[in-house]
Image (cartoon, rainbow, N blue to C red):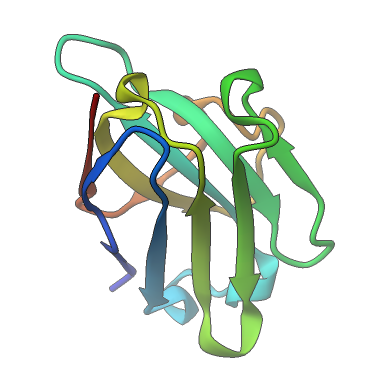
Length: 129
């Protein structure tokens, strides 16, 4: 079965950094490989809707970012390890939330959560002022 496992969350102060990882496995059950996927990071704060943070086309390496993270966050990947990353710098309290990794093969709008079928369980990020 397809598994996405996030790690790297934690508690930091404003201005701090974290690096999230998303290890993928079982993608072959879909008939595809990691390189066939569109991968993305989403986040959700309590009482708020899940929102797209950053996305990457695993084959082409093209990226998309939400406006509120541009210049602060960087999405990257290691195709050999089937792993997705999110480097988060200059963190703010409003970045607090559960961060989720998502994957799918066909994505028209990379930062819309409805586009993705496969999800991880999430990793908590808390930024204090």
